[in-house]
Image 1 (spheres, rainbow, N blue to C red):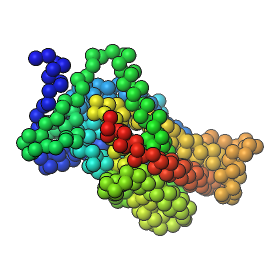
Image 2: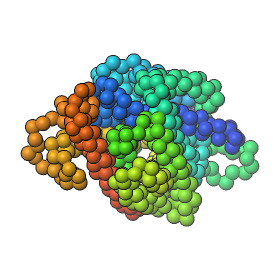
Image 3: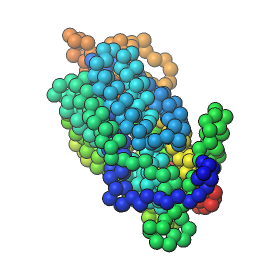
Image 4: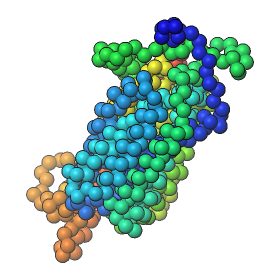
Length: 502
């Protein structure tokens, strides 16, 4: 029998129990959790790295953003094309080993250049996680449950942020930032082995809808189209077909813009929240890690799960809720965030920060669900990779750098114009900057040893106020993102019907 004939015949599909599917989703969640532990720990221990290696906030933003994102986003596309043809569980297991190993090696970096090169390596490994993971989830879970399943997978973002913040802060305080990198990196190698043993590779299109099944044992479905022989022309045609859906369909492109802008604000502010609490309130890294961890694990975790569950539930009545849920969530979250970062009591600020994440993170599950349901089975990993390429190159690559750049400019202005307060938001970019350099006078953001008390105070106050200002400005991007989610509601129902029919 020829391969073509075999591909055209219905194939019996293995029946995975709900318990096994939950195990698979749990393993994918664990992988994504380690992904975010290793990705974001640099934000928690960034202040210690900055002081030790004498970095600027722009450099800190590059380490947490662009230098990680460049290879992470670029390699995501060829890895996704590999995932459309190859074994997705093997790809994820190999990726785990690579990014975990490079994270551990970050502890040996002696300067900015070495740390930057190792962050490139972390990005190489993490590129192999989400595209094949989204494709696996779509094969294990039927369309009406995908937003929920993808939101559970995305729970790895707040969970990884929480564990990385708490563990990284404690390790950096008790030992050093170098030890923190090593300790959080190595367990990923063990997880990779368990993942490969426990997770099976399902047939492509395993959970697609089947017309009029008889009894459970008789469930069959046509196999997806057999992959065409590899050629560069074919690869570009596949990318073009996916890009046409993501960037030429009104509802989808606005959801892509919405998730990109929301992530830009999230990565940009998240990279400097731990330094903010250190600089503004003088807290140690262990305490800051606990604050960031509890906020990320509680509010962001609830929001991530609720977004998928609510949109799947409400989406049964009207698909428009896949866009309105994140639209309302982001619009509500933005002013609460700004209020929290304008407070001068860190306990009250931390308490209020438990609230906005519940609304903010509702955008993840619905967006990923719509994207996965908008493309055919054999293009799902590619759709995730292309989405992540656009999203992370701008959001992860640009968000921390943008916020760090803002903070450096605000610090320079505040240093030369003490007491200006909110006026620094305008004055820092108004020209006529004084000659005194904040970076030279305050290397690493602090005055040199033996400096006058007045200089120590000026360095501290300039840096603390600048961090607040940079975060507040970046938070405004949440409002911009909400507008795009509202716009995405136009024509979404028609688009989803067309996608299901194709």
